[in-house]
Image (cartoon, rainbow, N blue to C red; front, side):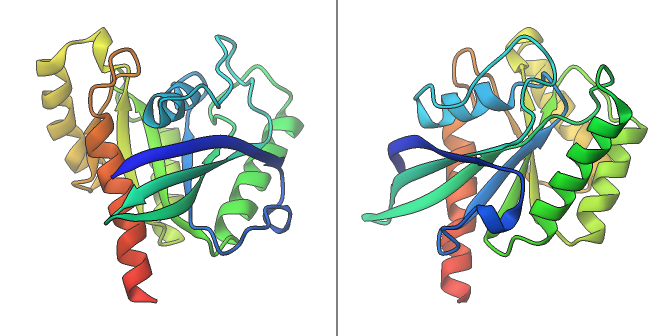
Length: 203
C-alpha cells in the first residue's frame, strides 16, 4: 500500500456538507496539541494539514482526499482532522458547540470506517479520556490508538506504554508513532487501509 496523492478537500461543520458519500472516511481525533495534523502530514508525506503550536487552532473539521494504491488498484479515502478535545482556554459555549459538532458529524456519517485516536504517549488516561472511550463504545465506533510523540521518550518506553494501554483502552489496535522520524507510519497506514479493504469486501 502506498500514498499516491493527498490534498485539502474542504472544511465542514455538518455531515451533510461533507458530500462525496461514496468515499470511505477515517477520522483523526484526540486532545488539543497532541499532534493530529503532524500525524496526518507524516502519514501522507505531504504538508496538507495545518499545524500550530497553539492548542485549539482547529475549530472545524478539515477534510483531505487521499489517493492510494492497494492490491494494485487505485483507491480513495478521506482523512478528517477534528478540533482537539480537552482544551480549556475557550468559552464553555464554544467548547460545547465543538462537542456537539463532533458528535453529530461522527454518529450521523455512514462513510466513517474508523476513528484514529491520537494519544500523547507521555500521558496516562484520565477521566475525560475514559468518557471519550465510553462514547466510542456506546456508539459502537471502530477505533485504533496512535501513541504520538514517541521520540520524546524512546523506543523501549513506547513499547512498554503500548502494552500498559492495551488494558486501559481494551484494544490490541495500538500503534507507537513519531512524526519526527516517521516511526510506525507503515504499520498505521497498513492497518487503516486494510480496514477500508475489509469494509469493501463486506458490501
